Image 1 (cartoon, helix red, strand yellow):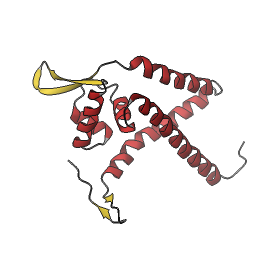
Image 2 (cartoon, rainbow, N blue to C red; image 1 turned 90 degrees about the vertical axis):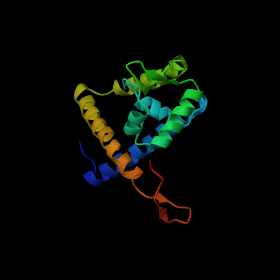
Image 3 (cartoon, one colour; image 1 turned 120 degrees about the vertical axis):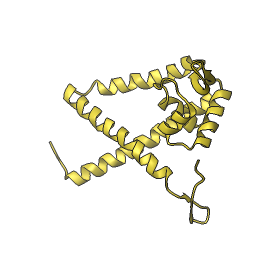
Length: 169
């Protein structure tokens, strides 16, 4: 079944994945523009969707953002009506972040179209191919967290091309 060498196939896949990432970023930019948010805000909200008792600290942990950047994200999400901050009834010192659900129908219809399209493409693959794709993508997702943390720990590139230590909390 192979028509080229492995290195060429890997190069092809890396290029395809890079293009996919760019196209996904542009799609999400269009959605976040519609919602009046930035991509970081929307992706932070997305990453936190399955978190029970979400706190600002936990959001910082799962996104890799600094605590000050996380606070800014939460401020924007709250202003646009996506989340509310509430005191935990069991521990009044703890503030939890709750999704309001106010924008779920609009965003749900947009992402429903994405899901339908994805399922349409997946229908062309057999069970073994789907298992391979799932394993491959799960491995990429697991590695993304590590890579994000490595990048956020690097010195910031200054305007003169000189690296400067980024302000971190």
